[in-house]
Image (cartoon, rainbow, N blue to C red; front, side):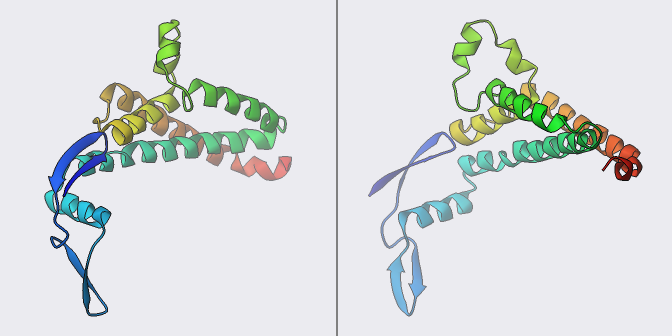
Amino acid sequence: NNYYLVLGGVTTDFYISPSTVTSIKGGIVTPLSIQAKVFLLMLCSLASPLMKLLQAIIPLVLLFIMTLGVGLILATMNVFFRDLEYLWNVALTLIMYASAIFYDVSKVIENGYGFLFKINPLYMIIANFRETVLYGQPLSMEYLIPATIFSFGSLFIGVYIFYKKQDEFILHI
């Protein structure tokens, strides 16, 4: 039987016979499912799609770092400015639409607003993740470097502001 594996944007044609990989369950030898065979083959051969999927961890870590930094900044500011909570809800909606999560960016670029994506670090992280997972492309350094700088910058600023103002929290709560 010929099977086609599409993972990470790379299509691979391979052949597996039902007796190639088996599992022993309750003393009876049964063939594993096709998915298990494919996964075992990928692990054994360290296939390229698997390595490209492992690159998807980097944008996720950057997203976590950015979120932590911005969260510390917002937590500190929210103690002193209570209305920031309502303004942040509006800003978050704007950020969601500016990050091209649910739509194709080609229409925006065609209309001359592509520069918005080049200054949005959240879009850079999402684009790198999307290219790696969906299309099997390596990480784009054009997006990775600014997103990394912004993520760690927001974390350092967030930690600095939080620790500098934490003694004043009790006075304003």
